[in-house]
Image 1: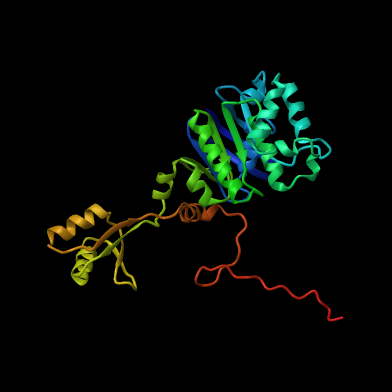
Image 2: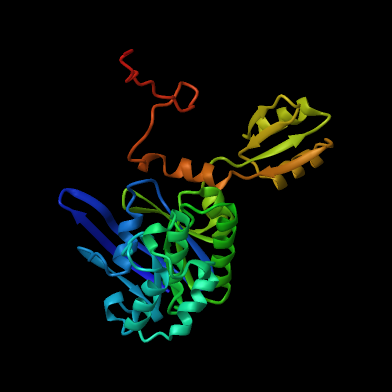
Length: 319
């Protein structure tokens, strides 16, 4: 388990993380979400002992990272995939790490096979693509077979097959009872991978809990209703304080009452329903709504909320 308690980190006049507390438990994939500049990478660095918090503590199974005897056997992390000497081969990079933590040479071959890099094990890392670098970083995180794993944007540079592989890998590691903590900007991928979320903005906690609970906190949920007695149903719903929007296809989007309440109301009034379907906001929609006030850099929007494409003067002088 990862336990973060009241950590604060300042860089001169910048408050990067502000009195942040949360837990990451074992056996599930926990997504770490937040807008750019929210403090996610800084928080992960403090968990890994790379930065010291000005206040508070970050522990792994009750111990700080610096208190671990053989840390690669306790915690694996991918924080910066390309933080590797470009002149080393993939094998030599992992073998060097293995020797510092008394890890058998066979394990190096095993993780290279696991991430699909066996064929290029002796190629210099400087020649690797971004995706290959990500796979090597994941191999380094898995090297000590640790019970706790942290991944910062692990699918950057991966093709669709690689993204699917990472998704299944993370789920498989969690299913083995490990603690898996992963950050990503891809909400669609987090919706498919994570069961729990920690969401921060401007260094402070916004939400911590299940994906379903996070989505439920947003206002984007409604019930789609269709009835042959539409006018009578609309009047009844408005009477009960619901917000009703008539859609072009003849259905109603209803908020303020859940599906069970709408069904009971229609039944008691003898009104027929041809559709009664709860509609959930997507994780992306919930994230955008709940982090709106925490976005550091925001593009201009049109009056209808659509992003405006910036127009830049031409650099062509006409010569």
